[in-house]
Image 1: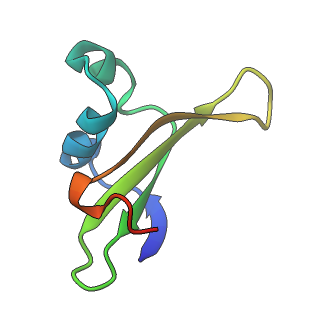
Image 2 (image 1 turned 120 degrees about the horizontal axis):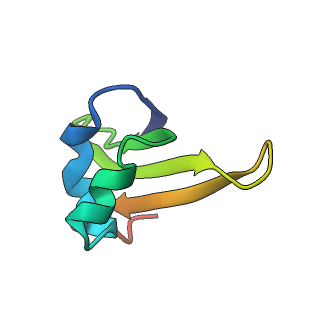
Length: 77
């Protein structure tokens, strides 16, 4: 498994974001915010999870806004 910053279109990650957010309206409001890390499956290179970081209340502090792993990849460590 590899982890890297994601700079592609966030819409292609929407399915992962929807695993962590029940409200499409809420998701539309923050999907483009902050920075996103993605985890790739080592064998196929597919994106299996994401972590979205947004600026926090203080300088140098970040908040985890969204985090999800595909159901079939959960529990693998």
